[in-house]
Amino acid sequence: MSHVETRMTLNGKEVTGHAPADTTLVRWLREQAHAYEVKEGCNEGTCGTCTVLVDGRSATGCTTLAVQVDGARVETSASLAEGEELSPLQAKFWETGASQCGFCTQGMLMSAVELLRSGDEVTPAKVREHLHGNLCRCTGYQAIVDAVVKAAEEGATR
Ligand code: FES
Ligand code: FES
Image 1 (cartoon, rainbow, N blue to C red):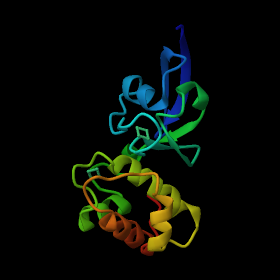
Image 2 (cartoon, rainbow, N blue to C red):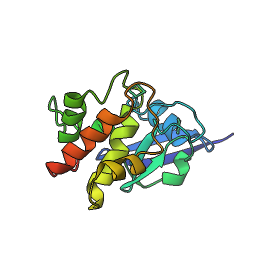
Image 3 (spheres, protein in one colour):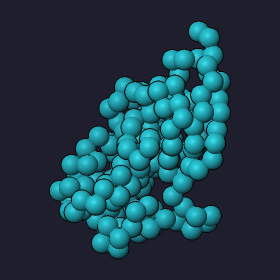
Image 4 (tube, protein in one colour):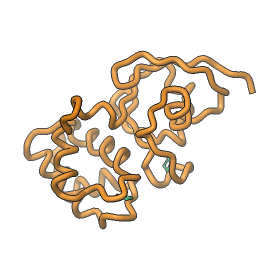
């Protein structure tokens, strides 16, 4: 398949790649932009670990083609920390033990960021509903729910 040029703003920086037209966004981010924080798990839209924000809305990178987001603004979890300092949401994940092996964490964080920025009231039930597409094999979810609720209580948006 012929290669196509795709450009996007990734975490505030312009990036350009050349890849086959059927390259998924998660594969493009990892192979063209070296955004290795974005994980590839089930590759069929089920686990949520590849979740990123595209123009502010969550999308699974394995069910989105890179060419579909040409010209878009893409955010990954690498945008959250400032230097060595964790973002408020990441700090809550740390404090509550919401990340164990960490494989799901990038997607959890980005889905949670979408909720925190939505303006909706962030209750435990709302967190569970919003993160229903993000699977975790390690934590049992309660620590993740606690982390997002605590972050919301402090007005965090990242
Ligand atoms: S790798 Fe994309 S949803 Fe699982
Ligand atoms: S922390 Fe291991 S899958 Fe969630």
